[in-house]
Image 1: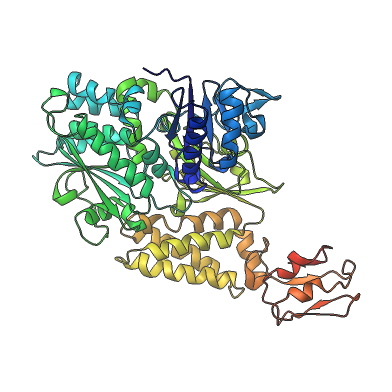
Image 2 (image 1 turned 60 degrees about the vertical axis):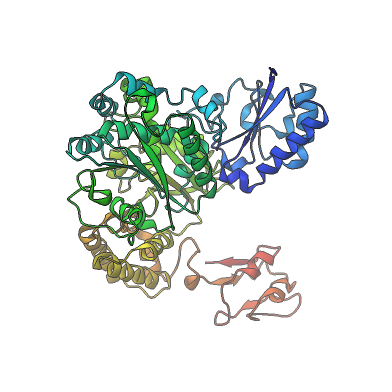
Length: 598
């Protein structure tokens, strides 16, 4: 038996893979073979570590050295210096893991990780997601064994109820209650479904969980099947997630081989099987009834409720549907007990929540925080603040269905109730940060354009109402809006919310309403001053040359594609506003700061 003295963990999530982490793994194997170290050093491909802004990431144990932005040409140095000679390559270390140039004892001591509490993400970046033995070594399938050998189905449901777990897919409905409804239905055929059709712009929570810890989802779905009396499950995952799909397929085959899926699991008499269904990327299929219609082979459109899926769902049978993150918490709750989960978070929002942190933020990545952590803590401490000396302006939570939270509300706790109070939602966990250079009218228009494109068109309020709403926003950002248009936009938002068939239409106006509430002055400036305060809306921009700063170098006129700039050498130039197409090329080229946009 070979004694492995060093483990090299290389991130194999989508972000790091796109930054060439597979080549790092190959290079590590080559360099280790050269030095006859392959038997002593194990190279492991893991899931996402979370700090995506600094990928590719490599962690070397037992020291726990966190190397960031590693290139193929750096591998030889890591092997030679660190692994062979025991000298840490400090130039490659994540600077947050250094304290006065001394390596911290644990990543939990760094600003990015110390306020996190990883339950759903507990195995991501820790194990090889393609090796079931590593999952088992981290208490994997212990919860399923516990439930099947020592708990009744009702006791499993009671445990989930006692934990206070609420759905992490957006609505926040109590998970245990949903399971109870399905369990109460007297039907010999029931189903368990997983919503992995993550479609919010900037969201990658579910994808990272499937890539880094697919067995936790399999175990959780088997537990749900046991609790409600279902023997068949489906994971509905979008085809644009090839790494997640491949690892999920591998995990399902391994689970079947080990007897964790199939007939008579743990000798309990309980049968459960699992299949994958690929989605084509329709955002509306994240809505539960549309998702089930798609699994059945129909057009992905929502249907009126009631009856709810717990009563009449997939193929007309009682069905439990939860999203990936919700399921990821289940094995931990069953194994550790509901009290351990319930003591984290707030009174009404228990446990933790995973957020995909993106936009104008230093530490782009995946974070898991206790419910109730403030938005300020997430952005300034975990996220490292807004880069380039810019000022924070707003944070948008909940994807295209969420709202924009201004600086004055930065101390808002991140939980279901608090976010709803300030006009936003938790959603599935997208968190996009904006700075002073963002136009909030343009942001509202961007998210509305997304939902217009993704509407299934089944109901008039959504199909026609949102299209008309987008037209009004376009009118304002082009400088043709009126104050009456702003009032009409607000009125139309409420009509759409109150009359749309499904959650897509009911929540689509949220970005518009929240920006109207917190940034109405920007709407008014677009209308009354024909000006975009952030300098984003092209039709309202004007480029001017400051006479005192212009040297007449002609650099600006030489790059202008429409010959809108005129002037003699060493004399002040001018811009013809009728010819200017607002491309900004002149401002970029000017070395003297003589060109401004207003």
